Image (cartoon, rainbow, N blue to C red; front, side):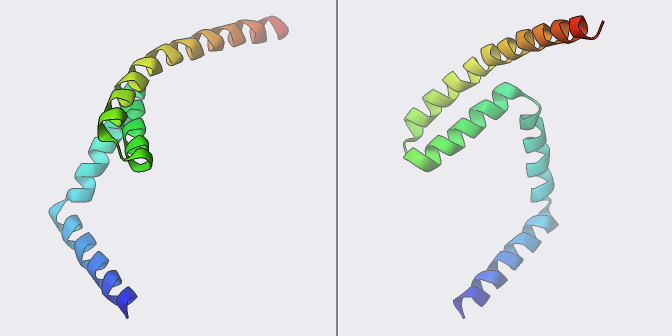
Length: 93
């Protein structure tokens, strides 16, 4: 019987949230976050570390560091991609 009550509560909250436009606003913000590797690294690290460790201070500090390092990691990936392209062009001549 408890499951029915939970299901009805979830249905009511989802309907009210949709009526107020909350899912659309959340989707817009998440879309903007997903376009930036630094933003996505920060928020993903923050959420995962907070959920697993429970220490918001350490999670925030490590998230800032992860966002910074993601820029350097992206640079390494760009360099490796250019090397791959040169090797591939050399093999296909």
